Length: 119
Image: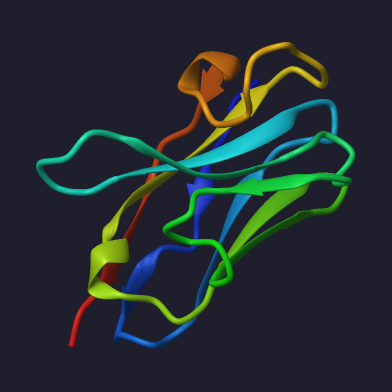
């Protein structure tokens, strides 16, 4: 499966932005990000059927993941400069014993989209 994240951009602190990932509901989807000079980290994930979402503590309450049949959305509110990163989406199996929080769950990765938060 090929994935592509889109919708990144440049925003000021406190603003909102939504990024999207084309992915069918045959897959669970994870969002990860990599800031300059840092390792890639988990942001959040959603079940294949949309009935469960998981978030990193750093974004909980500010970011929301949702999906329809063909697209997964990452709604980011109250953005901070520390959210600046390249955001990646990744596809994983519907069901797996591997945690949603780990990269090992996901077998297909898309090209990232850059989100820059700065005044």
